[in-house]
Length: 193
Image (cartoon, rainbow, N blue to C red; front, side):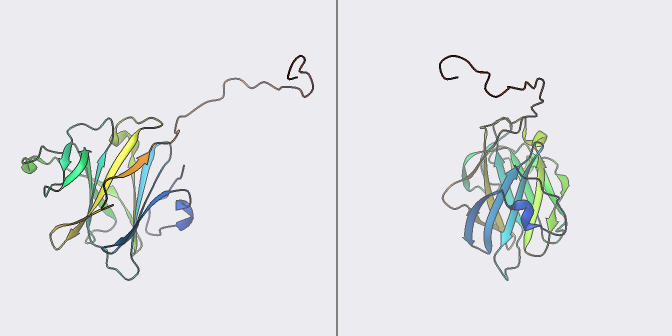
């Protein structure tokens, strides 16, 4: 589990325990992700010297409804995406989250986006999605995601290029201790005691 304070300074230490997909093409160095008990975090690292392009991040999770199997431009994703995150370098400290995606061919029915804060330090973008936004998730649930770079007003390459990325929800339950018992050393009797 990780916890990230999303802000203008991207702190590498906060991302030490995150999952990572190395991309190494199209100006994208890596996609990082991680969970805490209330959020799913993402970080996009651009290649050294690359000017960050805008992006769309498609997400599929078990409880998301109104899903579609293709990007808004029609490229097949390979799973049902029910959430869309969009980031534009013209407004680097915010991103747009749309929950529930229209059927293919009905892109004119894309819902309203909700603005969310993003951190950007010139080469890395980080943000948090509250787990409540993608539905109740449990340990072992699979969250699929695909990053699509915006390229000259159109759709660029999909990352990872071999298929969707996978983030498996770790044990994020809020377990409370209700009984603690001291077990004195040497008081065991019988076989194995």
